[in-house]
Image: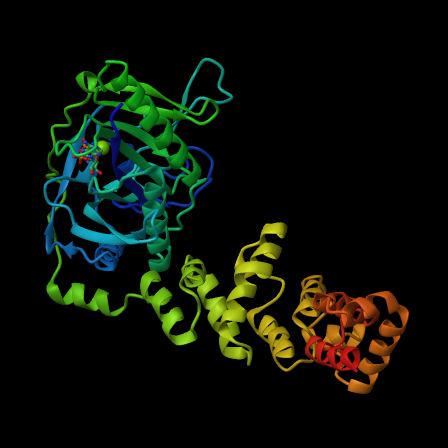
Length: 479
Ligand code: ADP
Ligand code: MG
């Protein structure tokens, strides 16, 4: 049995967060009653004309610059002709030969932990189609045209991806970038961010690509990974059993965790693309592009490197902290407001804070402990008012709404005991109560020190300063 190499290219559809549609003034808001947000242009009435929404050009330009691509000073809208009930015009306005963005790239971390470049072939602007509705309509189907004309940026990767995990890493990176730029809400449940995955396999070492199958409309990172892995196995099994992969479009059924054929290449459409005569070419100047470049926010990779350089945060933590701008902003605000070390802040944001948010199903913007409040708590650990362990207890109380760290420490009397005579008294008590262990310790079983520390901490409800406890114990036990 030969070894197989997997080849994957993704086509990601990212809905652009404009208020109105790409060629009409109708609203793009999600969730309205069916067919209440489609105007005559979206419905494809004769005699109406599309007018380009300038904002989508701005957004596509931002994206192009963010992925180090070239932004075309001239791009052209084309008609992609096909019939479908949710497409009343009989064509979709897209870009074909001259897209607005070409030759970009981004970097992911591969399975070996190395940085890997994935090429972005192009990103073009297009309008979304409507939706067919089958549920709750008996034997009939309904058509909802609210989504018709919603702006999409279709981002096409080079076939540089080599595993399902890399595909997910790439898609997450695009997801992070579009949200940093504020050009898409990235809401996958609502279909604002979805992808088609093109997959083929070839014997390792073979230059030529194998025949690919395309899995349509994957709208969760988990489904992308599962669908691709299923498809890889299907293709390898098929070839090893003497069969051939046919070029076709497949659908992923998440209930059965399998992909099924939708249509083969023979049935595939010939779209008869041609430039849309109703729309002028989009011409933008070099100055315009430079002006957009100047207003780009700090991007995830740059922020990640800065968190490592400026704050000394571990690279893996910096990667997690920069997945979204609100998380990065929270971390940075807390790190600036505390005397504690920034890595400690990172540990808390990635650990306890994320845990509490997940448990309550909250976004960081809804956190019950603000960045300033977390900073206050960590300052109290830093200045030895409380131990790291007690800090967890204080955090829980803060999360439950019992006030600031200082309020909770005061109200519950959690201040660390640093008075050596008070600690000595407890140490004496513990030594007197455990003569057997004392004898063993003196006979050379030094790791019993942990037992004594534990007893003292128990006696003081965890409030004795651990460093002092250790030191006093050692002195007394060797005396
Ligand atoms: P189409 O227009 O038919 O969708 P494209 O040539 O534009 O085809 O490619 C679409 C996607 O398929 C791109 O992301 C590309 O990288 C990927 N792709 C092309 N050939 C292969 C292949 N043999 N195996 C896997 N992916 C491929
Ligand atoms: Mg395709």
